[in-house]
Image (cartoon, rainbow over all chains, first blue to last red; front, side, top):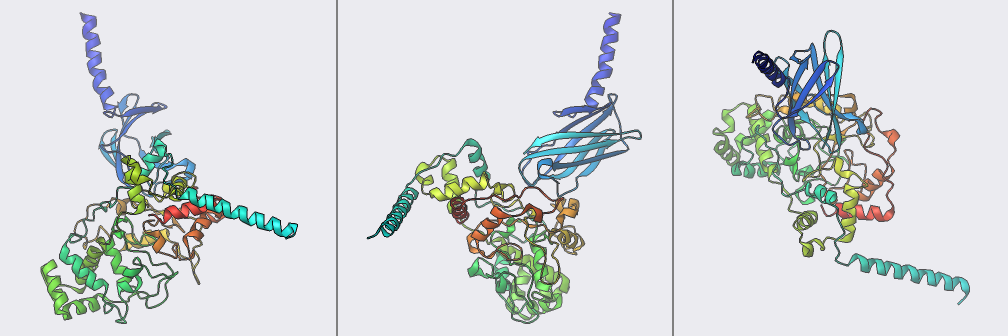
Length: 130
Length: 381
């Protein structure tokens, strides 16, 4: 019973932490000790139409605010990025929304997300085919 | 008849028979096989007509009275410093709203080709360099530019006020006559009624649209009316040619800009295209963020547009609808015919393109039949 209570209390502690690091319905990737969870918000991406992404950042499974967060996207095969600079809004600790993404042609895009801390920069490349 | 003459005659007859068979084949009503992927791509280039992007900054765009007044003003040459240049002087209604010239002629000669106004409301950016982020604000440029109509806000206000007919219609739309407003506000409002008229300039469904709908609805009887040459040309457009990467969607343009190797030098200068276009738009007193915009919504692009080095020499990707009627072509009118355009894409030198630009355009090397087919297809848009 005592062991059960210990396990239960640990689960109750871990579950909210896990949720804080996961975008609901999103995917997660890691680089170093940083995890990035993301998803495209509410809309199907269409050529030359705006869309947004939601991001959650955790370090050692704990939401954290980096010194700098940079987001962009490009088409490496075509040697170009977007024509627009996305705007990042902080929603909460480690929780962000990036707006004004515009993909202006079909093909293979890469989201480029840089997370900068005092000690390092972790870069995330996420593939997306439109 | 000697051997040489006989040989020539036989060769000639063979060629004639070959051409006859080819023409008979072309006249057959056949639907080429289109793969699932091809059909998906074709579907994305319609339906037509397509609802244009919203323009919250012009609340009278769909106002019938504004559209009617806008048409009258569009045709009126007195709204120019010389009293002899109307919007319609360059955007001629019976010429698909172009002028047939390589570069436009206003008060002086200009350096860019007059774009058609047909379907112009489909655009996101306006002007070959995207100098404006709305149709109504773009009207202010030709009205007031010293090289074009060279009017002033005061002149335009005076013309509206001095015409009982204009001023009465103006007052019905805006609640006050032009005499009760600042000249700046009158200029803006005239630009908006012009845009309301231009919003109505929409082409009818084309042969391509009829084919597209028939193909997607499995209406074979209708689909086979689309010529074999056009069908082959369509396959090139969405296949080998990759034209759809930029000339995408119901309006056959993604609304953005590209460097396709057309020189950006003018007679005595350079035309930086999108590079200066972005700067012009951002500093404009009439952009979507301005006090003259009826609503500052839908300004995401204006806010987030990113000026980059590669924008130098990029020009607007024009719509291809009605393209057969809008020669000559390119931002400087340097290509006289559609065949010249296709030849350009067939032979373009990649060395002409920016080293940091988009690596999309490369010489297609189309043979004569492919060129003819692509040309046939473009003429059906």
